[in-house]
Length: 241
Image 1 (cartoon, rainbow, N blue to C red):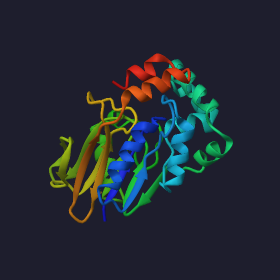
Image 2: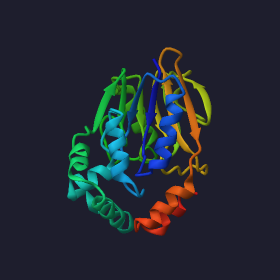
Image 3: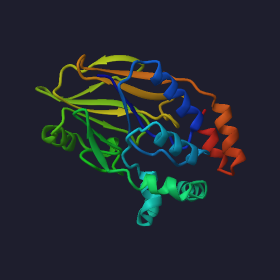
Image 4: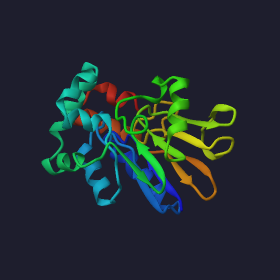
């Protein structure tokens, strides 16, 4: 069984399409999305529609939460909040209803999937968590593998007999060795922030005990032009490069 894990599409339809094309070529058995289908990007309705058409199970991201529960809007900085409210104007009621069906976490194929931090936080970033808390969370985890998004970066943290283990996570295959519990940050489809502007997603193979990171190129200029066309702030397009 090979599971593709995607996250943080952020309304970037062009990137999402290219990632799906790569997934379709990669002998994948299932796909799961870790939230933030919307926000920043110019085509949120189209992205949500494609997620639904493909039947991709998805957990709640903080950008979905900000529109579904207005008490969370103040969690965002003012430019991002304004961008999210503009995003809302491009979303139909059926799309909003669909976003409202996303759970804060799910267990699929024996792994935990959550946007921010296990077991079910939508808003906590992995980099905010102390080593002590990481050890506690990993020690108490019911599942051996937990996938998270939210930071838009790639990272892998394990807990083994020697304590915390941090492995480099880049393109290609990484064996899950040296630990018995793992938190894996899968990067971003629609807005990478790791210094490489390609879309990122991972493939988990539990039988081989490996994580494969895929880097996927897409037409950034096309998305940036859509950003301008639909009235999103210029920085939403510039940061894609």
